[in-house]
Length: 520
Ligand code: CA
Image (cartoon, rainbow, N blue to C red):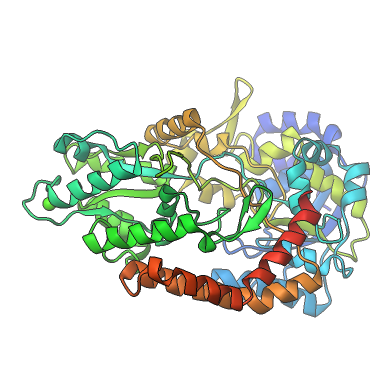
């Protein structure tokens, strides 16, 4: 085991050493240095890097070092399949490291934890993790959301901070050019989109404007909320939602039906991008930089960044506006950051130091540990100014995005259980994003999220048997209706009958039994 003091002094300079030496006792977990093995699966960091500055500082403070023992790390399949494959491979190898950190860990530990592969954390947290315990006491919905069907918690999650994700964006300068007011209702949105289509706001003499566009086509379906429908209950597209304590599916509701009917009409009229289902992720970049796109629903920070186009497009102003009122007068923003992700870390069943491990997990919920997990190393990525961590200029002004720089030093890892600090992101959000967030904050438009359920083995079987084919059918019909293949109003009764015949009621029954067990 290395004595870290001289090494850290060399790496970080003397100012950090002072902090470290002082804090060492406060955060020390073990007298003798202890090594724990870790499997880490994430598309952005497929192994745990023992050289990360964050690992080095955590080791110096706690006395515990993590040693990479990742099975399947060299499998670079696509982002979606690779991660679960690596976990399955680890399980099949019979070698579960002391700690398993991964994206999409929740369903995995909730399935194999009760079978004995992972250590239940409830008592360990109660007895040895005062900071995690305090967090869960304050946020009981987090405790419910991470509990498995047997009532035990098997992982400590990554907990995003900051409420706001997506917002409605529109060309403010086009409204000005055409002498239009900001649309406040769904009817006014339709008038504005029609004016964008027919009145040449980009001034080139052609009807080439694309009034509503989206990088992700489900952001077109999102607009059913303007007819009191729903498109998802969480930050995952097409998810179930909670309606007055009951789990429902958005694509079986009448508001959805009415919304799809109107969106099909908008599509036919050219108010929606004709290529909305196929244009893909470059839609925003292309349609804004070509001065063609009028309105979208997308992330605050990255979308606000396009105001840099005012350098090349005179007057360009693409900013957030408040959610328009629906047909019944409701203003909601359906999308928000989910407060708990299915990512995080767990303790493998052969771990001989579960108490030390939960204390180590708890370290990242202390002020010092949380700062380390969010901002990287003091004196390297950030300095403390007036008691707050502030990124160094070279971090903020680097060509590499701030979050990517932080992954590179072992901070902001979603495969680590930690509580994100939104201030980390606020420091590099532009003024238009912050202005938009303030607008949404003032209006209080966000709605509660569905935080997911943990099935028993029997419930899981029902869900797996019926749900995938129902979902495929729903999406196929949805796209068909928008494109003019069939009329949703005429087809609706047959559609509802079909999805019920396919087992929707059974799926909803297991969703609701799991939900009530977990959250009541
Ligand atoms: Ca034009």
